[in-house]
Length: 442
Image (cartoon, rainbow, N blue to C red):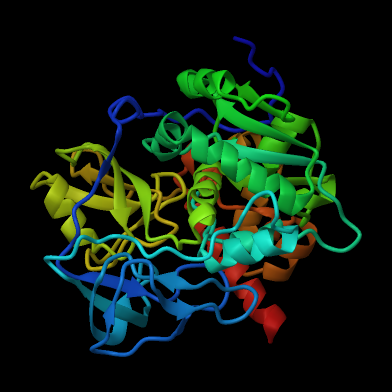
């Protein structure tokens, strides 16, 4: 099978660790006795409540509506009783307003049907509205409202729609299983996306370690449609939008630019499948596929889990070793180690990875930068992480942003991974970017 030779410069090759779950089919997860739903589940304004405490709700019902353009509604993942509306913990450590929903034990949990978006008669604007009303955000982890991403700015046009099936993050196999098991939804989702963006062609990008998914999708490609499947070499972080555009199109997105600047739009493959699954029924997103894996997990797998399921309940159901040391939401490269097991599964949760004490070393001693250049060789954007790290130490944030393109960094972690001095470069950059944003607002 032909594999595209072109890829992006630099990058790294961390151990993949996907073999324990990439062959396991998606299974439905049980309903927790209490669902906890934070209103802030996406980039942009949190959803705005439209229900009250003590109210009975039906699965699929809107609990909170979108609060502005860069916002999406929140739907009930179960039929049940709203026990209370109060602060809930989040992965960031902050408390935010949320809904405590108790499922009805005897309910069939059938999903409420809505107003279908007909692919043949709907206009591009109606499709975007339908995507927003479905509460769909980027399921690859970014959780950016999908309808806003698909809106083509004035003066721009989209030639190519790229469906991102790379999934380069170690351990995670969510997108892999979606491609194998939900191909009909993916192709219908592509039809919606092409009509919404005006794209003339679609490329489904897949890494070579998912050849079975590439073969299956190629076999099922709709006839007379400008859709192709391209297999690219395995390399991290090829799943990043800019890197994938370079690999597939040979184009470079300009500094601080967006894919539309090179006439492309990139959408995650699981997000595409949800569009194809939900819009024909006018439904909202209530659950998502999540990989649960890692050395500390007993029942590893890919599970369809209701949004709002508490992490503690998830770990109880799959079973974890007594020697658990760290739990990551997302993968080990770009995910976040959680400090509180009472947080919930949200729309952007793509995986849960559990490590034992044997796999997690004590924080290594940080040494001064030795100017070895390993981080420069690894950075997929050809930034200078060494120089940025030194400037961060001296709090030269404006210089980092203006002269060394700090804001282009998407925090993939490649520099930290290869640094022999164990300098936590990504943490430095994350903090620096936060300070730059706050100063800009001020």
